[in-house]
Figure 1 (cartoon, rainbow, N blue to C red):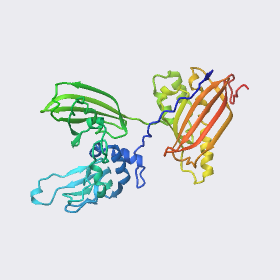
Figure 2: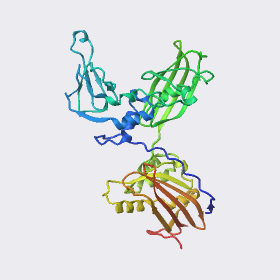
Figure 3: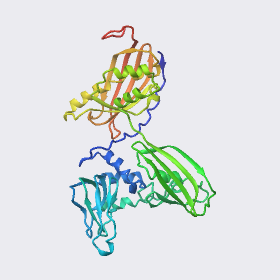
Figure 4: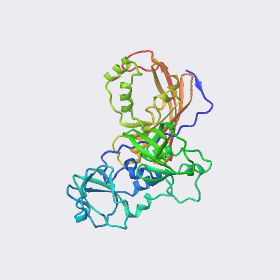
Length: 424
């Protein structure tokens, strides 16, 4: 093992931590609310900044079966979005409306539209225990952004942003115009992107040009929701002029999630790329979860790099004692630290032990060990049986809270026993 680098490569920016939407209550986590709102069709065509502002503005309200959520002829508080449960829209009692059928609202359905200028036209009654997000009327302007990309009034937009601008006509239908001398039919992907939640990113597309179009006419983009899963979404877009489909696009989107140790172990147990003998032995070993929850920013393809980025926090709620939080973070800092220096040198059958020679920590700001911290580790040198690593920890606001270094002695395993030690 021999490696030295003049300068460590800069750490890659980790993807955002994907929030898991479950058991939302009055103190809903902001990220989870943002993820939920991003799956509401009415809101998907909005700029990401608008959805984030709506997530900060919404309130949670609960109803029992039989409760009136909205009454005919009375104003509503704002835009209602069903989070959980069912509600029934009752037909009007007016004779001319007597033939209007009742229908049921489910999760992601909405009513009210955030306007305060008119009374509600029908009764909405809870059929079951019902939970709704309510965006108060004063935030209705968030539903009318300046463009699909930007909610703010700005002096001018980039030419590319203007080329990719679309006019939402209704849910899943957009109208686009080709600017002079601009590439044609590049707006279909924009239309598809504006029908998936903001946590899912494009990972593949396939486009087919069918008929020559007219640059002087608007193009109607019809988006078909082929699939909506927890991790993947698929969209088919048809570009139409004069009623004819002139272009089609199929695009796939994926939510980038950070895996914890338990999820990584489960993937390895079922991954056919690992030898069957390895998977069987790993499955037989007793697995005890660590008291530290970790979510890794890199996949297995990055495990041979002399760097590692991951988020971590203590499991459970800690007492509000800064001394305790610093002790917990110091404990957590050593779990994977020195092993990063070995990453480029790992090979099949290689078993090693390490012994810390020097471990230094500098605290720059107060830390909360039971809230997410980003740990950025780099190893600029592994030489002479010693591995050297540096680390930085950031809080969720992006502030540097700690700096760390460690040098460890690294040896091949020579003996097998209950407590083997490196041969010093």
